[in-house]
Image (cartoon, rainbow, N blue to C red; front, side, top):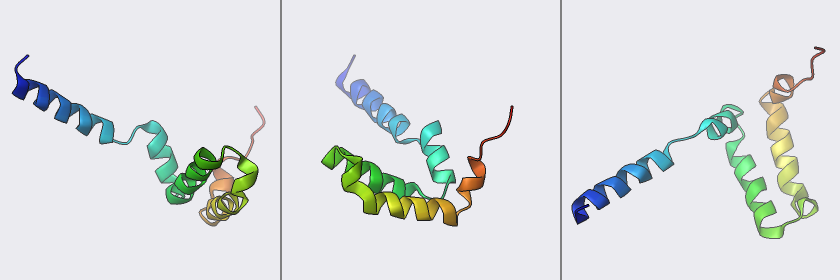
Length: 77
């Protein structure tokens, strides 16, 4: 494969990787994507959820503010 074709293929793959996947779409639809990212980053850095209580609380408040608790209510089958 010529060098310019490799570069074009790599650029096309980069565009595909930048597209939001189903997981990203679900997180964005909650209105709390930023809070989720901060919580995830905290856990990645500290490897202990207990060290991320503030981030968890911000995410929880956002979740409730956007009415997402209604989205995840359990239902009898």
